[in-house]
Image 1 (cartoon, one colour):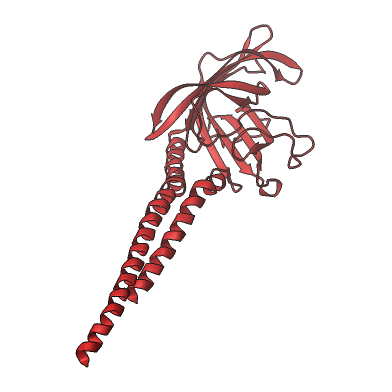
Image 2 (tube, one colour):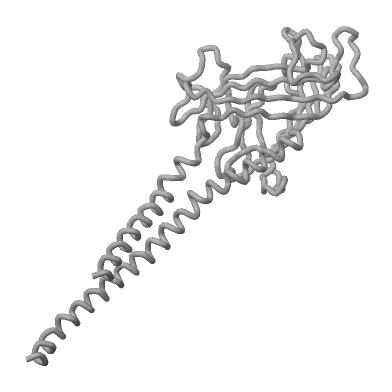
Length: 311
């Protein structure tokens, strides 16, 4: 009897594990491979800058330190199952005289400050404009915004460039390792792009951008820029070279390791345990039931013999 009940338990466990394996294969990836709706991320960059002094009209020959703070938040009230709505504020400040992370517009240490509101597809990472979750005056965006898609590929992706005001080509160029994280590196080259240097002032814009992406999660691990801006007559007004701080790189690497472990646990190990463990439990349960039935049959067959011996 114990063997029979244990066999039934094993069959139940095996069935449960097989169902879990199927769910982990078919259903779970579509749930976990989505941008969460509780993002509140502060990103710090550092580098150097040379900026035209509007008061003197001089462009400095020597760069000064610069720091960048970018705050990116999801608006959970304006997001839904398919689309994530975002608010991103960025401040670029000359790191002089213990400058705070952002200063007001009258401070000569301010290089640039901006606020951006946009929405993205929670799976592909691409900008979404045809949604009711954006304010009516939101600027249309296109391409990837703040992350690559899950399971990124070695190919060219469109990436939004706010200075140019349109998507640019981010071309896959190589594999690299950053703080132990295997990355795909994408490169953007912008040359002589017409832009508005200031309100009513036209000019051009050059930039070389490199982006290190952890492909499984699509998370950006490092991003560098080598950017120049010129007036229409060719006079340079900005030379900006920035990249993530080392502390930021370390934090993103730690986040990537944790997220990869979570994805692997759900999309890799759960199916393996579910299918392999479920099959073993079903076989063990069937074997126990068969042996229990055989043993019961032997006991029934021996019962008449015992009766004759007794008489």
